[in-house]
Image (cartoon, rainbow, N blue to C red):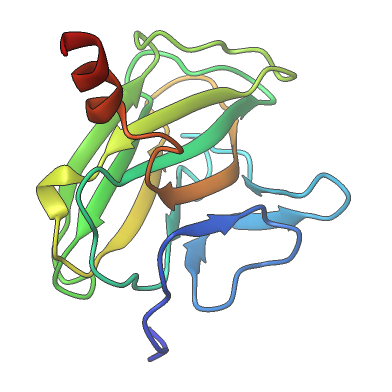
Length: 168
């Protein structure tokens, strides 16, 4: 891993170019499409997984979330296919699961439809983090994973204060 300064939050990555300080296995930036996509994940080849790992971000604040769009392309997820969203607080030595996406998750497997995921980062408040997305192909079929619009931020509005207004 390269040693870079911590990246300030909030953060948005649109993948117009490959992001500096990120690491990957079997992923490419799609020029003109402005997203990042895996090679074909196929259990019958050496390319049966893909990994995208961010640089290290400054400490997470209260109410921050991780959001990104993902696309299941050139095939579909089948039994045994898994996409893990993971977070590290120790510079990538260990990771904890934030979410798991499988073929039985409520996702759209259409090569033209992007799914969006929004995940709370509240359990990482005051921690500097690295995010990792890992796609693993099961025993049958094949697919490509596209990722775009990666964001770590706070909501645009304070939901608690709006609820307080209605209670008063």
